[in-house]
Length: 189
Image (cartoon, rainbow, N blue to C red; front, side):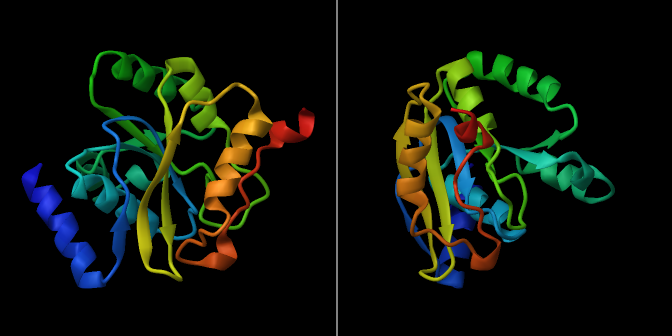
């Protein structure tokens, strides 16, 4: 783990990105805005620089060919978007048995501009009691890191207001691809 920590800090120094905040040892880490393929590397750099090895949900199709072993080595967990339940249940069982469990989720679900975020981070938090920590990448300021951690209240709109307030000024690497933090469930409330 020490090698990963030094590698992440060296990479950040060489690329002149500033790192802020503390990475928790346990919880659900929301990585946003998710606007490029580099976001995966950024979230790893954030976690590794603090000596934490996260598990990262990655679209199953990326686990074909020579990338599969590399993604697994970096904590990648293949997610079948058509049937995510099985993967999530296995992760929840794993979380129960570990003092250190950090699951990184790109709540936007895609690098392209979308209409809504995916609610999985709130659902998993509520099912496990794990807090939600907000990680970010902000290209215009060349800053990445961790924001606040909160425990969802169960009031989706109120919880998303906390999320929106934090991400309001975060643009991602490709700002045009940023999806505003909101859930389809908020429209149903």
